[in-house]
Structures are given as C-alpha cells and as structure tokens.
Length: 187
Image (tube, rainbow, N blue to C red):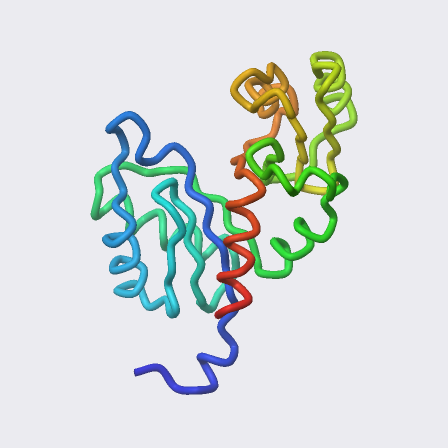
C-alpha cells in the first residue's frame, strides 16, 4: 500500500487514447485498461465510454507517465496506440476558455481538438480557407475549438484539421470533455 504523502503528491491526469476500439481494430477494453493501470501503480482509475478516455492519479512527469502507460498497453494488447495526457488544470482551462458557450446546449456540434503543441499561424490560416460558412473555430494555445452546427461528419475542416495544423491531436465532443472534467472534480 502506498504511503499517504506519496498519494498527496500524486496528480490527477486525463489520458486521451486515439484510434482504439474502432472497426474491430486496436481493441482496448476499458475494464482491462483500468486493471492494467492499477497494476502499473496508478490510483483512482476511471474510464468514460469506450473510445479511450481515462482519469487517474499518478506521480511523475507527463512524458514518463505516458511512456509507462504505452509500454504496458503494448505488452498486454500487442499494439501501441497514441495517447495524449492532460493535467486536471489543462482540462479545466480548456473548458473555461471555450469561445462558444452558446453552443454547449448541443454538445454534439462542439468539438475540442487537444493538440500536442500549439500550431503555427499558417496552420490556422489553412483552416480558415476551408471553413464552411456555418462553422466557427478558434485556436487557444493547444486546443482547437470547432462549432460545426451542420454536423462534424460533414465538416471538411474537421476531416483535415490535424493535417492542416501540422500537429498531432485527438478530438472530443463537448459532452465528453465536460464528463471528463466532472470525473476529475470527483477525484
């Protein structure tokens, strides 16, 4: 059992997996992911839906924790997914910085791309060039916000955002983001 001072130093993290449990490929059952992270020494591990969202507590840097998780998943499941880690503060800031609060009532039309690093201005201009008239987007630091009221599946911007920005990313809709924040706050 971990001592209390180590538990107090542990930070809350949000892991966003990409490209898992889609079309019968890269299967990563959430119950097994929870068990794996607990076996790796993480605490208070909780998942949200099957698309690879996990909230947990652990010690270490983002890079060290990410590598530890990816190595464990690779050993156990035989593939190495992409994983983006956010601190609880990163997630809370992304929610509070939402430039489209009026869009929150229809969370399926508001998506956040969590970016590995901030994109260049040229990448942002490339998105503007393909934006549909009904769409709005904003880049705030390492988050791209997209309000696509005609649906994310119809959005050329959504389909090409990562490539045009030139930055690795993973997207979540507003409902998922706020559910993850609720789990963080319940930690």
